[in-house]
Image 1 (tube, rainbow, N blue to C red):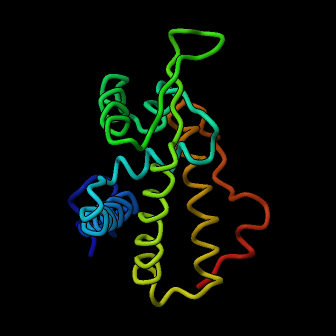
Image 2: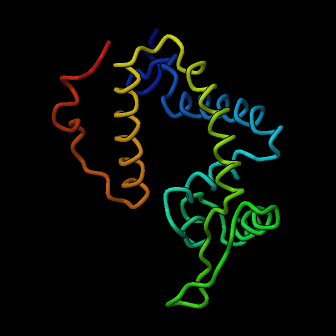
Image 3: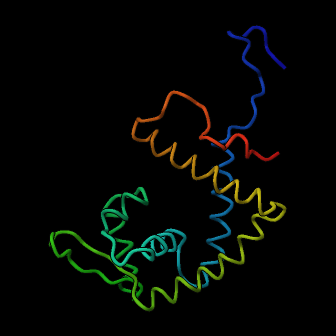
Length: 173
């Protein structure tokens, strides 16, 4: 239905914004992750932080703070908590003594493995009804959206809205 009294005949009922849908998915998944991780006394933020560290030998706390979009002080507090619990180890950077480098301990790896097993049980429930091809396509689309959002954050979004080559042809209905 279009209200002809509005400038430009703006539709009265717009479709739900994709940003809103992203937010709803994120909120619903976080609720489930909190429920699964609570018995291990790990928060979603701690799980995410430890997961990010796993792929690196060591990682700076400043880089972690930027990746998690939190202040250095907030990340420092999270790292301190995880270190006190024996999940992380800290050391000063070899070239820059002010740099704080963080790594997972053996206990951190074991705890992260337990968390991953719980999350591995959740993912099939969340994606029930999504076939393998569509799941792969969703992952591809999300990577593109992440890259675009990162460029937008940096003020570098391209003006042309054409999808990357091959993407349109692989769209699933």
